[in-house]
Length: 135
Length: 93
Image (cartoon, rainbow over all chains, first blue to last red; front, top):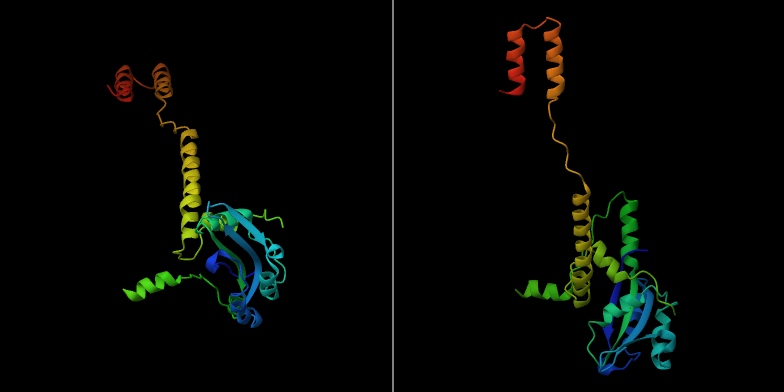
């Protein structure tokens, strides 16, 4: 398995919806990413966190995301969910998406096949780019 | 669904990811878990240092040297003066 990434997507107004799911469509359908795991999290006004599986969210949300997730693998552990939820505002919800960068896996294999070596891979988040370019 | 596998984020923080991150989740992870790991390493090192006995300083075997010298003197190989002079040298007097 190639590099994998966790994306945490906040829902507007604290409710799970299927509205952002189509954003995944092109990435998944074109084979650029493969969703390995998906879990929903909600933090109530008191700060208590509840994890909700895809099979347990409302039908509309579940139906919207299901085409892009073969089967949630459970690779995101309870501790990961706990750690991620720390960054959530009270009274908010999020979807935690774990996916594989298939393009990167294929690229690495191509590099190795050509006798190259992948020395490193460093990802610079948007906030850093903005700060550097803006300066 | 049981989600009791090895935690990705805490493992990444301890092992050290190659990513430059500004995100609050990973920053929190690195602070908490990398620090724990660094502390554990420090403790292990300190323990190791305490357990290792100090090396014994090398000492010339004065006793053996003097014994040998006395023997040579007894056997008549060294004169009284030679014996006294060498003995003084060995003892550093």
